[in-house]
Image (tube, rainbow, N blue to C red; front, side, top):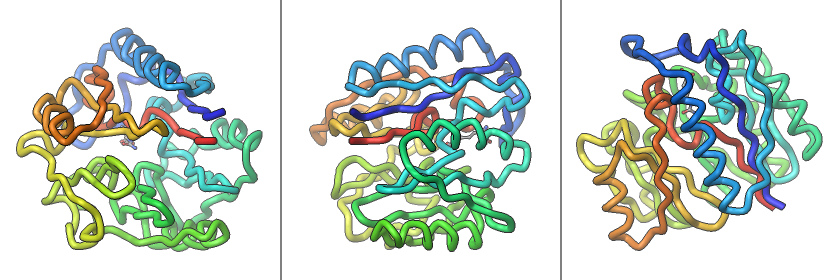
Length: 254
Ligand code: CIR
């Protein structure tokens, strides 16, 4: 059985961290969007487990940043934003039921949004949230599962996965200005549509279907032209505070 872990939206979500100016957030709308996102996962065969919201951590719905699930292990992260570190324990407690847990320790920082798996390789964003010590610690844990780690400097976006998304085993969607494209030269590359670089996030499900957002219609069209099957969700309230569609879940495949 494939699982998806998600975390409910607290009232305090209006205070979530944001790179630019603070937007007005509609919490009820965010909750409706979150429920629709969960329904897509359920429809695609995931058993969705919901971790309770934590009012003291406004960013807790962005559960992806708190853990990285490998094959035999799960890694509890140490998020780069100190305000988010208290989100980790509740998620690790849930994952502990599925896999042994390893922990990223100071001075390492790592956000799950910086970890992109392609086959046996983990591409890890070196970002404002993830540092070299965090990447090194992850590489040690990953080696026990036979996975290698490649660090990818990230520019202009919060996380690697805001810049690069897996479309299938051999293809990635990339925002060219945010990463060195040569690092992905072994894959087929589809470039994000100009003007949608910061809007188009894509979550690949175990079935191969892709989840993307209403805010990136031209990217959706491009992906459909390439033959991908797509589910579209409205995630405007999460996007307003720098969250993409990957960050709202942790997928644990069979
Ligand atoms: C933050 O700044 O940490 C949140 N407001 C957004 C986190 C988005 N996470 C992700 O894309 N993996």
